[in-house]
Length: 82
Image (cartoon, rainbow, N blue to C red; front, side):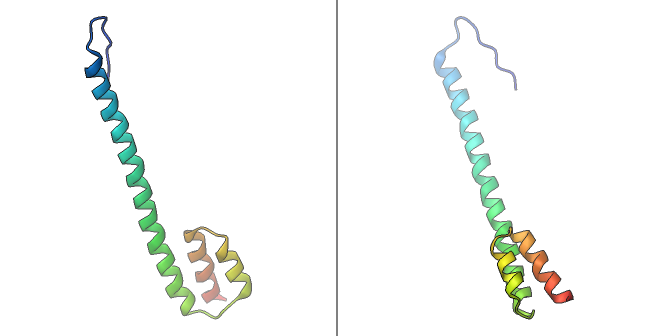
């Protein structure tokens, strides 16, 4: 995108363009957060399913409590191998 400002340009036209740009950025950020939440939800569900099929481990539960959803799934998968 290329914007050119002229001495006699209408301020309202520029304002609408900037408002549209800011709106698009905010929508993009919101969509990214929504997508991240959906991925995390699926990872946590998979973690719960795997954990239910594994033997309990106090060490693993402490690690899972402070890890990301992807790390939690890897921890639980490691529990099944042991």
